[in-house]
Length: 252
Image (tube, one colour):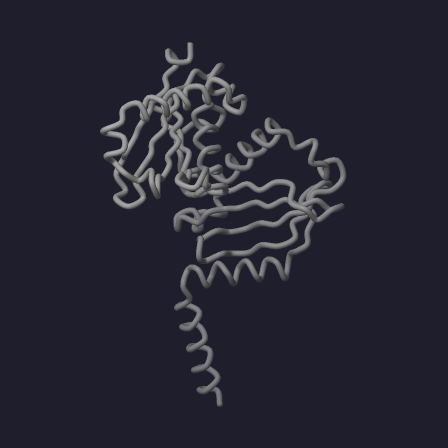
């Protein structure tokens, strides 16, 4: 009987040793939720659960905000930006998450209202964020983060029957904000642009007018003085069909 018990123990240990990284992460998240949640982090914050999504390799934290913080009007863009920088700084310096970061795990922090149970804030950091060398409190860092988050949550975004926005990204070296699109249907025709230069010029004039009048990019346009690039790709061939770069001198 002792030999059988000992054999079962050995098999159990070996079985545990064969668990994949994703399986270990799922088990740890489950155990944390069952044994330690809900738990007050501070007088305004309670951690409700922890979950691991193996498809996206994302560790997801779920919190409830109460009291003074349970107010969406206080979550201004600047306040959220400061909080995001603080959380990323903590994540970068958290030695307890060394294994997760070495395996490229993404981290997501979800905050909900205690009164309404609706989401108030979601922060998402991937390996590029916590391994990055860009200083946090810089325009280049913030803009890169903002554009990556916009693309992740909103793209692809259909503009009209023939145009889809694929991504928005920021090149900090050339200080250029890029908008990438896919053209399909009747607009997916290279000869249409090579034989009709007036179409290309009309598009450039339309884009220039849009940049000048778009208040949503006023900070980037007027204060940060960055450039704007619009690239249109063929859906069928994936080739670049049109590219327009609007520089600061064009905006004067």
